[in-house]
Length: 185
Image 1: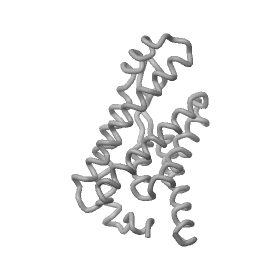
Image 2 (image 1 turned 30 degrees about the vertical axis):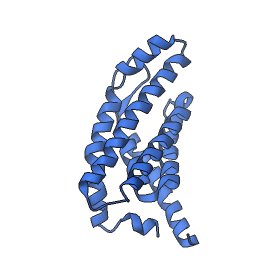
Image 3 (image 1 turned 180 degrees about the vertical axis):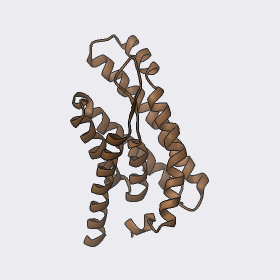
Image 4 (image 1 turned 90 degrees about the horizontal axis):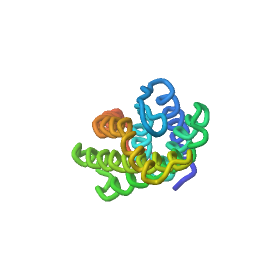
């Protein structure tokens, strides 16, 4: 990969990280929960788009920086490391599924498959994060597992939003000239 393409991907990774951070900061709806302080936001949706355009490495970095920085600066610093791990796992799943589908950006069905896989992994990682957060405050494993499960409403809403929004936004951006090939020669 030439230096020009590396620089372009680095710049767009930084841009995505900033958009993710601002997207969460500007629009979030808190929800009550037994474990943690979940809220509805578009950070995961934007992270999925970053990975689809930039690939695993740069997309994961954009998601981890944008989501992690938000957590650090907004009262979630103690668990920001969990958010970064979630972003990396999300990026790995999105990248693997998108690769298995041959990076096909012309078929809406395949884009929905990618976003569905992202939504499922987000539910799983959110549940795992909820368990770890509950254990960090001293609950037993059984209480942590149940409490984390009952706190998944925000993750479910975010997963459904990503499932619906990612394919449509991705196709719109492709029509505007932002294709994956532009970033990955």
